[in-house]
Image 1 (spheres, rainbow, N blue to C red):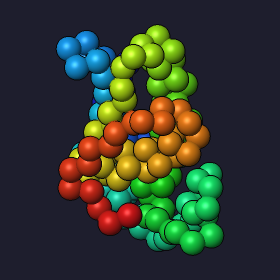
Image 2 (cartoon, helix red, strand yellow; image 1 turned 45 degrees about the horizontal axis):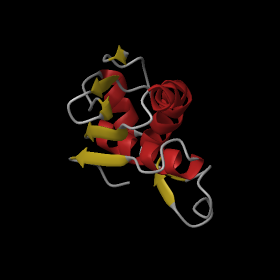
Image 3 (cartoon, rainbow, N blue to C red; image 1 turned 180 degrees about the vertical axis):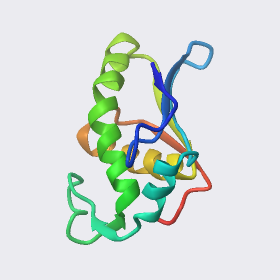
Length: 130
């Protein structure tokens, strides 16, 4: 499944892959490449992390990237949960660069807290300050 082109502010591109050789489900989050992505990058006021136990009162993050993570969570969590049910012996790796790296990191936090895939891994390249 994929939506590689940005769908607007707070909606970076993504692709969900299955790697049978390494037994991994890989979610790739696209970096900044459209005007909407750059607007997401520029919305950098701090907002509290919500939905992650113990963090909403003490930790703040980049609002544009948090918006992207929340949007992608709502869209992608059902797809990732379905992959986990279909391939229970596979691991999940979320990969991203730039905006995708920040979104991948925030998704990883949200999904670990929610128990979506407890042993998931995040690989982030060129992540902005979160």
